[in-house]
Image (cartoon, rainbow, N blue to C red; front, top):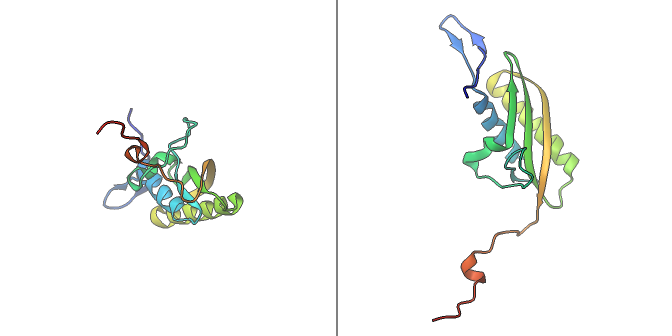
Length: 136
């Protein structure tokens, strides 16, 4: 399935097009910069939040891009103890500023979806540490 990328800007030298995936990565990076964000969530369809590494930041972001405007949905995991409305507001501001400054598009909407809460010190324990060796 190919994504149609609208012409963003026509210049004397040709057209400038910004792929939606570029805007997704910008939004993902801007979201994880906010204090209180533990990571990006695995997506909107799955009910299980899955923390993703930096290379997969776009997976927690959905964008709609027009010729001059963009709308963004960001799906995140928040750290326990932070005020969700404050963190969400900071995410909205940071994502909007980042996209507008880098692309020149007008961001008309930034929706923040909180999919999970991560507790401090919450880490997966390696299986080898929890397994009991019964045979030597």
